[in-house]
Image 1: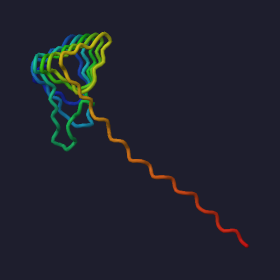
Image 2: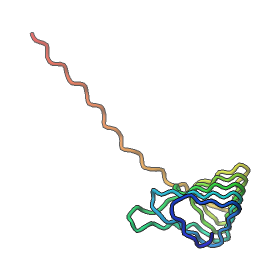
Image 3: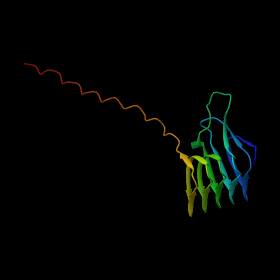
Image 4: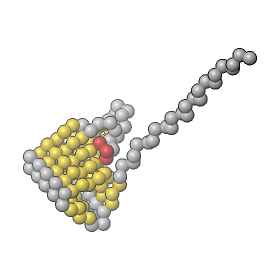
Length: 143
């Protein structure tokens, strides 16, 4: 899938996926991408996911917008950078100097070699609610 640009949607592969050069995710900050791979995912060294915003003012995608569902294993090549939540059936191996912005969950193991993780920032807290108004005072009693 090297060099491809993905617009919002669900993408499925029945076997394996190899990323040999950067791939591009183009859309807005509220769009969603789901990548389903029945087999495994591997990347070459320095293969990245690159975000591209639309020219419509809707912002740029974030790591929260991508989900990778992997039926086999996931191997991230050295010095590669990926985004998203990775739900991996087997194991994950992250090469030297690679990085992930997001989360990685695997049923067997996550193997790390001098890597870095960055969690997406949580959404801002809503403003506090105003205090309730005091109940009205009863009218004065007649004398």
